[in-house]
Length: 186
Figure (tube, helix red, strand yellow):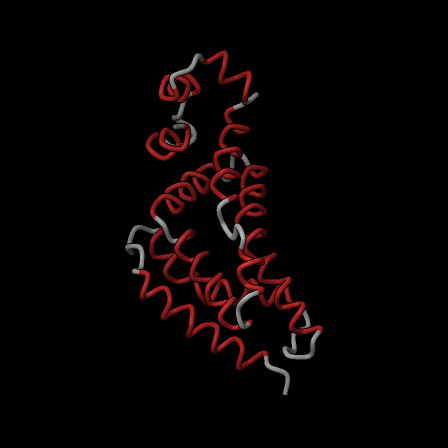
């Protein structure tokens, strides 16, 4: 309910009264759950991020490395490039100057969570001698950027529509191929 109000009204215009009413509770009850509007917005973001990568490592254990990376990045791309996620990010960008702590929390929850899974896998591959990477976390960010960067930018500025599942998979496979060709130990 709160997410809907934040996306429709924007963070600044969204009121705790309206959020409580939309949720079918009193404002007092809402404030018992969340001390501030910022805390509620952070909870909305955190809730949204919990779904990203859930079970990815168990699923990946049964797959070849490359396919696990492709599968994970396809899932992350569909999540990050969804209209719902883009709408929340626009709200956050609009509030960045007023609430830098909220932006950092979002970045940690979103980019941090997404990259940390991939960085662990890249670290393991580098430790096993299959990849030549000085900084697996930075490499994970670069790979995410290759996959999501341009379509995400287009959607954020309102010029793009969410890519189809097929377009996402094609882009992910190409990016992973380019990345692995450059990172393979020679």
